[in-house]
Length: 145
Image (cartoon, rainbow, N blue to C red; front, side, top):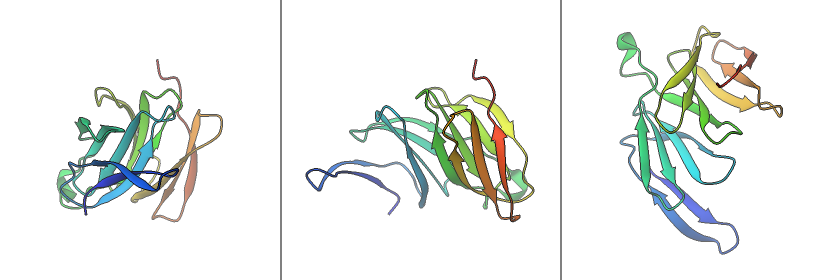
């Protein structure tokens, strides 16, 4: 339904609804401090919302002019510093970006097909990405400053 809904586990009630995507939502991540919700989808955007549903930022990270209709974000991971995140896409990349201004800090190009999933390793310094090429790669994020 192109929405992200925040539910209270304790009361089993709807807390807020995050709107803005104009196509299906593919992935959701929550900042470690619980203050922001990140969502990505087939509309080629990452949306940053507050817990009350307020849209703070719309970010366009991935683009591939040859496959414009197919470029979609598939996975998100929020980093422990609450300021950065990773986004994986059909364009074969993983991008490290600042959730406040959308600036891309790094572009990881270690796959040859769509990157479908991401997971942050417990050290917060590396991630695992999985691709349609049948591989999973462990990648160092590097320094954020």
